[in-house]
Length: 342
Image 1: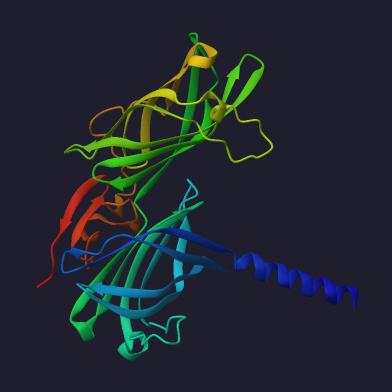
Image 2: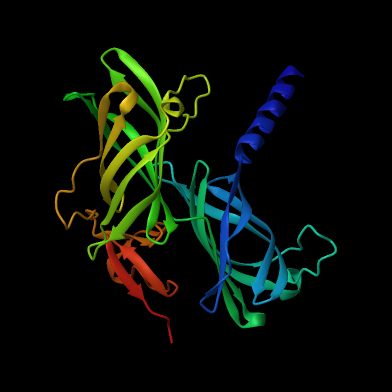
């Protein structure tokens, strides 16, 4: 009996782990015939179901067409393929026909079930509390392909971080930085849980979140980042730590950097007036050349969207973009235009 109970408990624990749920709330924008709706705050749920698969849920989706609001329904995508990379970013892909379900409000005339099976393509990625995805819904009944974007493109970089105080440098430590596109050529730069080592003393500073970072991308695909403002350093994630950042008030921060592909290099000067110190932080290393592009030894390439979503992994270069939807892709670090098929 005891053995049986243990087996049942183990099975239940396995089910719980396999069904881990990730809930994201962010802006959702719908594009129809090149016209975009205003961004609206929306919640999406991604649930792990085991064997590298997920269920993607966008409930109570409504489509605005001018002054008309069409209650479509709940888009539930089962069997979404997921793959997690070395940075901890999980890429999601789905390309099947599904029936859109009724929404939660029984008084609404949800049109989804009446459309029958609808071809849906979804590509996205998530890490921690961030999800970015593009969804193409082929509404043949309406003669429309509805393009849905949830969240903003984000890029996760893990590299060495070195802090210099009074010409003394700390040992390099592996650190993760996230850069998120926010539109209009601006980005949010996030360095979380930053700690400052001064001799044998370690000061828990906090999370450095820089909003409104200016970004400009050149012809080679390098995006240059600049920021020079005063910000309040936020508390880190560990509530047990005595994070000093919020008590410093607005701190002048000067940041310059650039990124391309999976590589970011930046310098951050933090003017700690309260400590009479300018803390110099270096993340990553300088690019070796303007043609710094990762090339596979086997001659195969990866294909990304402009938002950094991996859509094809290690495919032959000659056929890398075959049958992809119209748009611009990054193939082995270079932009490639895919035109509509006729």
